[in-house]
Length: 194
Image (cartoon, rainbow, N blue to C red; front, top):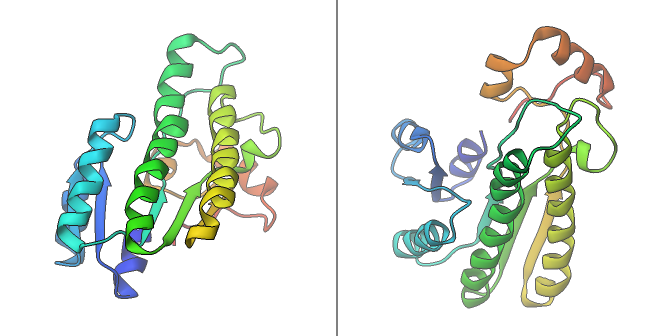
């Protein structure tokens, strides 16, 4: 959905995913979209991602960190769950911001948007503890990058969304949970990715 908006507004986009879906998005949206497969928990793949963006477009004006992993809700956090959730949801965001800032400073500025969650702002009993903690870290990373790099023309913000009808949520989330989470939302409904 974000790629569609960027393309509609005239941007060129490096569509990055680990699943292979980036190929479909590029094929559907045309030559303004360059697909790139990467695991954002791996710094070497993030470096390669930004190198590809610079090669394709000459500079980087924006970054949206929307990659995420989730786990089943459990009161007890396992080390394996913590490692898996923080690798993408926290470390990946930090490293993507790091490499984006390098490219943006060289290009004269830019904008970063990190997708967080309302579960990082308030307690959400449906969100896994490690997920909420990682996303709270994203909020902190966002503020730190904003303060440090704002004077260099880089704007950094977070969107702390509630339940959103992503493809995954539509396919995986039981209707009763969608209903419960939608009723908690400020507008009394789930959001759409657009």
